Image 1 (cartoon, one colour):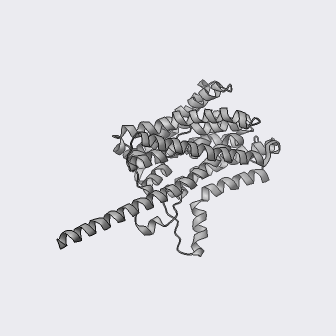
Image 2 (tube, rainbow, N blue to C red):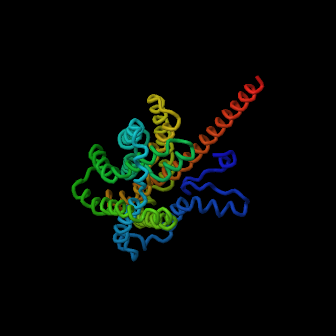
Image 3 (cartoon, helix red, strand yellow):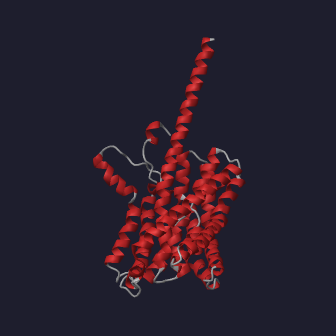
Length: 373
């Protein structure tokens, strides 16, 4: 990456396209396009507070029917977009993959339980839905696209990032509900897992597998038309978030908790992100990973998927009136991780460019000395 490209602010929600700062007239529309999904999240929340009736239970939008179809559609597109043909390129580095999966599905949940124990003393009136939301956030799989893009921009091991992030999503479809059930039972809020697994199989695993199989025949078309498939998936996610907040508004949940709850959740998200980031750094140092592997481990371990998190929450927790409170931690974690990780990716890319330039200068100087001698 050259000096000119590293000066640009990387926008991970754009999935690899840097923001073109060619003029003030183009900057604002480009910024909106780059962050359209995050703006959409805030937009549908505001819409739910203004017009809650259409998206609430028994509303004319029929959220239960549309959400079930939307969940299957999202997982179908996830399978359709899964780059399995690239996955095996990074299969040899088993230490890296073990670290990532252990952080995603073991250390993250343990840290979540630790935070819950600590918050029981610091935040005595924390609502049960928010507690469940943080536990749910901690057992979600990593993202695929943004983890890979950030690793690539920062100069990390991209092939290994593809494999680990893809594997995390594949096993997360089953492992996340199992971990949620285990943690809920551990905290005294369990529910039967058998019927849930049957429902998850029908609405997630089957569409996901169908997408993976179909990709073998339409791979080039899918990769060339992501500008159509991504907005469809994002639109379904925004609809589910809208209906979740519609239920909470009609049930007057926000009248009970207010703005203070939102600020408290945001502060916990920042602390959780910082704690996990520190643990990943220490683990990478202890494992003596090289720079490229450490970057891949960081981005694949610290990130959590909103794209899979929202539909799985609908299946695991059902059409609860307080579902919006359960989704609140991941809704805050998502834009925060994009912001911080985007800045880190740029910083590490700049470091790599500076190191390459210094190495080039040293090579040039040594060459001139050798010629002069």
